[in-house]
Amino acid sequence: MFSKNKKKILISVAFGALVFLGFSIYADFDNLIRTFGEFSWIYFPLILALSFGNYIIRYYKWEYYRKLLNIDLKPKASFLIFMATFVMSVTPGKMGELLKSYLVREENGTPISRSAPIILAERLTDFISVVLLCIAGAFVFNYGKGIIIGVGLFFISGVMLISSRKLSMKVISYLEKVKLLSRFAHKFHEAYESIYTLVKIKPLIIATVVSAAAWFCECLGLYVILRVYSSISHINVSLMSAVFIYGFSTIVGSIAMLPGGLGVTEASLTGLMVLMKIPKDVSVASTFIIRVATLWFAVLIGVIAVYFYQKYSHKDLDKLEISKAET
Image 1 (cartoon, one colour):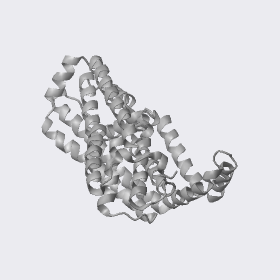
Image 2 (cartoon, one colour):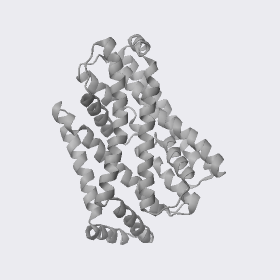
Image 3 (cartoon, rainbow, N blue to C red):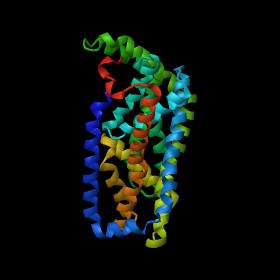
Image 4 (cartoon, rainbow, N blue to C red):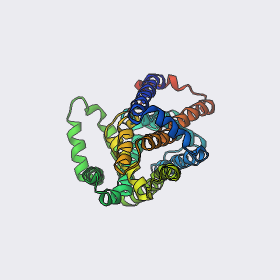
C-alpha cells in the first residue's frame, strides 16, 4: 500500500516545486530572494513548534476518539500510527489518512469499518472549528462570507444527518438494496455505530474545541511571520487578520481536493495578503514559509514516524496491501 503512494507523494513534491516557480515569477524572483533573506530566521523554530503543537493537540483528539470506540492500542503504537499518517498529507483529499485504519487493523485486528469513522469525525470537527475561527474575520473584512457560511452549514448538516439514527438507517437501508454494495451491509452498520458515537453532543463539542486550539496554533504561526516582516515592511496585520487569512485559505485548499491543497491554498494565502495591502514579495515569502512550516514539515514528521513505526512494529509498510484489508 505505502509503496503505491510513493509515486503520488513525489508527484506532489514536483508540483509543489512548480507552484514555487510560478509564485516566484509573480513576485519577481530577485525581490523574493531578498525578502527571504530579510526574514529573521531565528523565529522559524517557533513557527515549527506551533505547527508541531497542532499535531500534538490533534493526536489527543485521536486518542479521545479511539478510547470512545474502545480501540485498544499501546500508547507508543498509537502515537507513531497517528504521526505516520502525515506522510500522506499530500495525497488527494487527504484520503491517505486511511493509513491510520490499516495500521490499527495490523496492530490489533480492529475492522477498518470500525476505526475509519474516526477520520470522518476528525475532518468534520476540523472544518467546523476552522469555520468558527475565521467567521468573524469574514464579516469584518467582508470577504468569503458565502464560502465560510456554506461550508459551515454543509458540515453541520452532515452532523445532523448522522445524529438522526432514523434517517441514517433509511440511507443505509437504501444502500443495502444496491447490488454492488449489498455484501458490505454489515460494514455500513458497524461504521455508522462508530460515527454515531463520535458525533454525540458532548464528544462533538469537546473535539471541536480541541480542533480550534490545534488550528489556532498554525494561524498563530502565520501571525508570527507577518509580525517579523512588519518591522521591515511597515505592514500592520492584526491577529484576527492572520487567523482569517490562514483559516479561509485552509478551507479553500481542502475544498479543492488537490494533494495538500497545493496551488489553491498558496493562491488564497497570497491573494488575501495582497488584498490587505501587503507587498507581493512579502505575501509570497510569507506564504511559502508558512506552507513549509505546516504542510511540508508534516510530511517530514510523517516520514520520520514511518521509520520509527517500522522499527517498533517490525512491519514493512511497503508490504501492507489494501486488497487484504477489510473495507
